Amino acid sequence: MKAFLKWSGIVLGSLIALFVLVGLFLPAEYSASRSIEIQKSADQVFPLVNSLEEQQKWSPWREADPKMEITWTDQVAGVGAKYSWTGPKSGTGSMEIVKSVENQSIDTALDFQEQGQAMATWTFEPTGENSVKVTWAFSGDSGWNLMGRFFGLFMDSFIGPDFERGLSNLKKLAETGEATNQVESIRTE
Image (cartoon, rainbow, N blue to C red):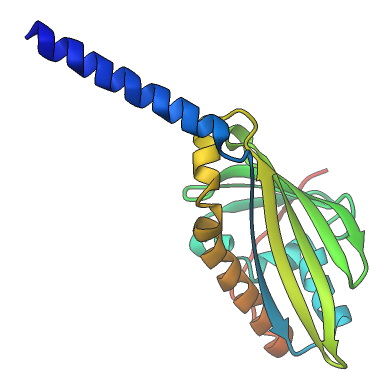
C-alpha cells in the first residue's frame, strides 16, 4: 500500500509540474474575430453598434440569456457610454465604449469581474456603394493565470459561434429592421 501511495504521489506531482510547465510556455494573449458583409452603408450600420441600447437588439448573449438585467448610464452611445449586466447564464460584468471613430471603428473595454478583462473592436470597411464588411474582434491577456492560458487556446472556438450569431442578427436588423431581442432598460448615472 505504501508503494502505491508513493507512486500515486509521484505521478500526481509529475502531472501538476507538467501542467505548470506547459502553461508557462503557452501564450498569455488570446483573440477571436469574425466578419460579415451587410448590404447597407457604414453610416447605416455603425449606429447599431455604437449605441449600447441598439446592441442589445441583436446581441447573441441577450438572446441566450433573456433574463439578463441590463443597466445603462445616461450616455448610451459613443465614447463614455457604459452598461453593466447580471444574468443567470451570463454572470456579471460591464462594457464601456472607449474609442469611436464614426463609420470606421469602435473599441470597447469589457470587465468580466473575477474572470478578467478584455477588449472588443469593431471595424466597418465599405465594400461597395451600399455595403460594408463588419469585423468583430475580441482580445485579452491572461497574464500569469495558467488556467486562463489553457482557456485562451480555445477562445476562438468558444466565442466564434456567438460572434457569428451576433453578426447574423446585426445583418438582419440592419437590412430588414427586425430586432432579435426585446430590451427593457434601467437608467442610472
